[in-house]
Image 1 (cartoon, one colour):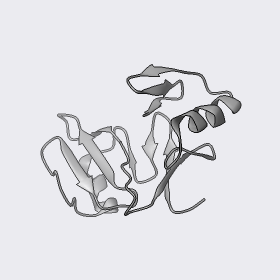
Image 2 (cartoon, helix red, strand yellow; image 1 turned 90 degrees about the horizontal axis):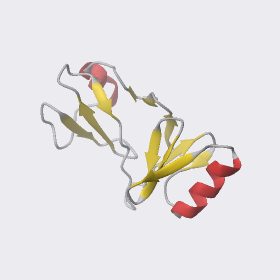
Image 3 (cartoon, one colour; image 1 turned 135 degrees about the vertical axis):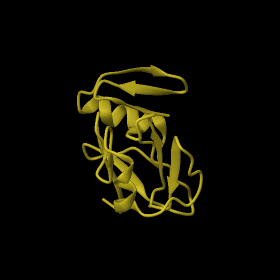
Length: 115
């Protein structure tokens, strides 16, 4: 595995978990953009875009990636980034994960979506 985040279903990633207070930013660093009362973007690799609930707890943990900051996101050994959605689907299905449609991607039983 290359550098990046390991996704923890229904938890988030190692650096930021659902329900943690906004002081999670002390572990990640200062936001580089989008710092608002409800959201902040961090320069981690891959980038991390946290959304906060009204009580300042982490509500959504979507990792971003781009060709210029090649960091990967993994779940159970499956690389979720930089591949075809069909390949990710096949790899997760082979491991026994059930899914359903979610917009242009799919939602998995363990508590996350890929698109």
